[in-house]
Length: 57
Image 1 (cartoon, rainbow, N blue to C red):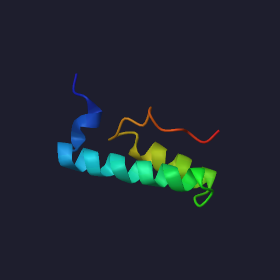
Image 2: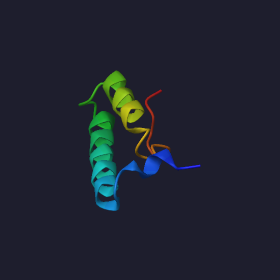
Image 3: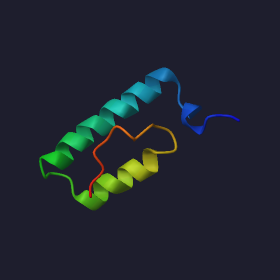
């Protein structure tokens, strides 16, 4: 069975992961709304392993 998370090459994966970490930092600072952060994680979950991110409760 093919892993769906391997759609991106390594460079694209690393860049996207870093961008998500920056968005997570903005969420923690209160500059990004909870629903927006959650939607971004949901959208990226097909390509990136989002289990290491603090999901907004």
